[in-house]
Image 1 (cartoon, rainbow, N blue to C red):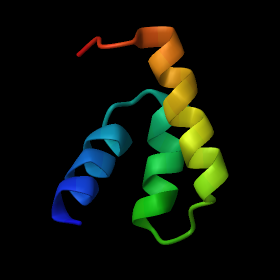
Image 2 (image 1 turned 90 degrees about the vertical axis):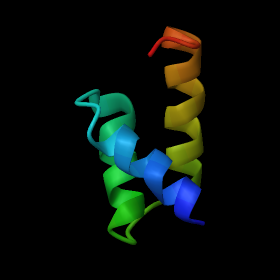
Image 3 (image 1 turned 30 degrees about the vertical axis):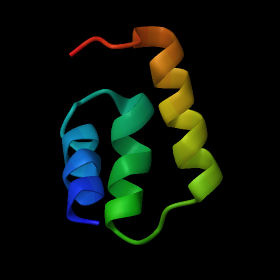
Image 4 (image 1 turned 180 degrees about the horizontal axis):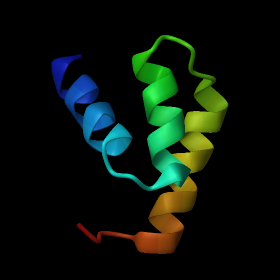
Length: 51
């Protein structure tokens, strides 16, 4: 679970609203799982493996 939290913190700090907002909501315990998954899938489509 620590690894997942670290990933979500990285997403939240990214400044990319597409994933930052849903990730921060997840960290705050207010996440909608479907919204988070959708955002991550969309980010992958737009950016793929960019760092």
